[in-house]
Length: 91
Image 1 (cartoon, one colour):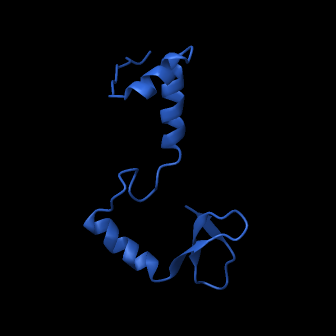
Image 2 (cartoon, one colour):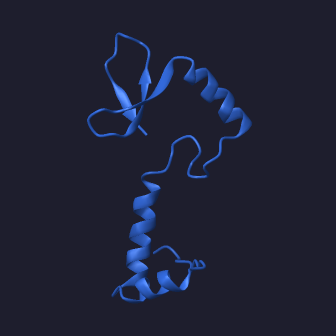
C-alpha cells in the first residue's frame, strides 16, 4: 500500500463552513482535485502561463489554427485551417 501524505491549504471562513457541512471532507476534496486535474490545459498544465519555449511552439501551431466560439454550445475551441478535416477541439 502506498504511503499517504497530508496536504493542507488555506481557506476563507465561508469555504471552511461549507466544507464542514460535508460528511467526508477528505474524500470530497480528493475527488474535486482529481476531477479538476482531468480538465487541466494541456499546454500550461494549469499554471495559466506558457514558458517562452511553449509560446514559440504555440506561435507555430497558431499559424494554421484559430480560436473560434461554437455557435451551438457557446464554448471556445481550436479550429484547423486545413480544409480536408472537419474536426475541432474544444478548450
